[in-house]
Amino acid sequence: MLRSLKSRTATVVGLVTAATVTFGAGVAMAVWSSTSTTSITSPTDALATPALGAVSGVTSSGATINWTDPGSWQSAATYTATATATNHTTQTCNALASASSCALTGLDAGITYSVSVVGQLNNWVSAAATTTATPISASTSVSALSITNKTGGAPGKMESGDKVNITFSGAVKASTVCSGWTDTGNQTSNTATVRVVGTPGDSDDDALTINAWSGCTTFHFGSIDLGSASYQLSSTGTSNKPVEFTSSTVAYDATAHSLTITLGTAVTNDSSHGLINSSAVASSTATWTVDAGIKDANNASISPATKATANVQQF
Image (cartoon, rainbow, N blue to C red; front, side, top):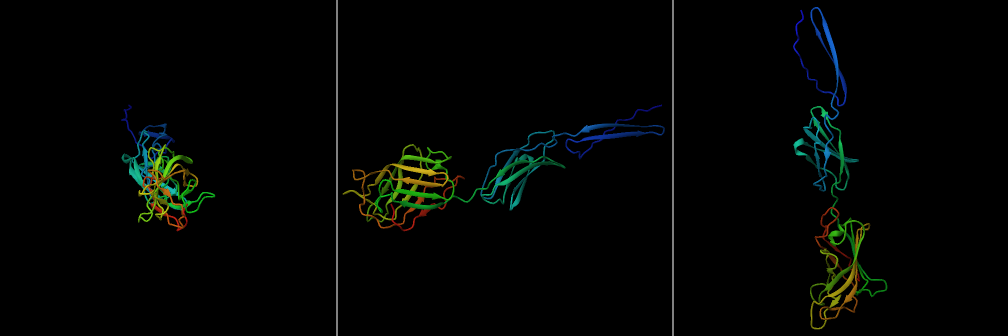
């Protein structure tokens, strides 16, 4: 007489993803025995590759890596992000799946790191998702400032065609100089008004600024202390009347990281304007104080915020 056998189940763990495995089961009795086999294929998406978001929170020494679980029959419990760069120390960060991000620290400024992110659940590890992260380089500075005379001009005296030449150590966001500019490629405008104001004998030096700029809803430049009060003269009976140069050209060279101002048409000696000194100024030290609104490519202010010329003849 045969007796019915109770059903039995078994759980098998540690299968390799997308592997086909054959199982055998047998029953033995005193007078007979029986075996059977079956095959299964483990899931192909046991842990799916993480879906990466944009890198955020970039500083000079770190970055935040963001991801989401793309969904699979089984979700990761933890994630690990690893940042590597040749000849630089590898850095990692870990987080529970619920956090969806972790912050890498100890990165070197200006170095582009390859970043991989994997999910893990027990012995399962997902395929890696990859991205890059580049910590912010040191703030952009002003590497050179000069005020030069036009070809064939009168040295030491302001006149149309003279130039203010500024070179930065790195890229500047041109749109922060003039809101009408873009941050891609070279930019130029010939609608600025440059103003120089001061009084001879006054303790305050003459100062050069951009007073108005058609086509720029907002603009930032700052002020150049010309190091002398003798470039501009006030008309009779009036003090502190400015000299202005209308239709001045301002140009940004995205490759050379340079800003050049070319003085336009001089407006002088009327009810609102003073005079240009007809006598040349032998030498002075000009100092530019940069408007804090001018930002570099990493949206940081220019630092340090001042730059001086040598004590030379200006204009």
